[in-house]
Length: 122
Image 1 (cartoon, rainbow, N blue to C red):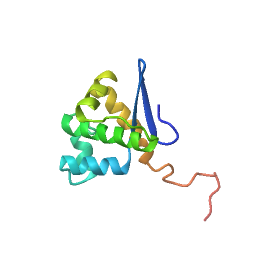
Image 2: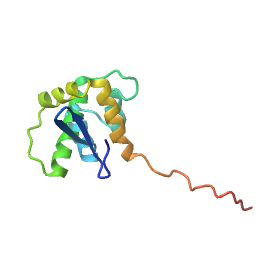
Image 3: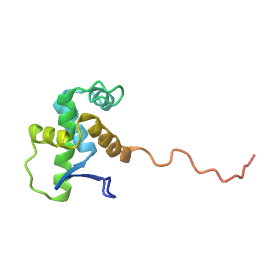
């Protein structure tokens, strides 16, 4: 569930996994994966064709988990191996890609065009 603050919390049994997809987290992922830009990163993690580079995907999810911990002031251990386990618990990479897509929606512009009022002027 995407909360108002931009956090995503996933309940799996008695555990809650938290993620927050932020510009900082994407920057850190880009730096760690050697991607030159955000489009290259999105391609590498499989958002365009599901050809997923697991290392990059896990790093992005780890950075999102770190951001969630930072913003919620939670002290938890976050490593690639731990986050990989979370991904497995949440139903695997495909379900986690859906989670990622939901989290990234917060960066889409809300209104690209002004609303139509039905009135026209010449």
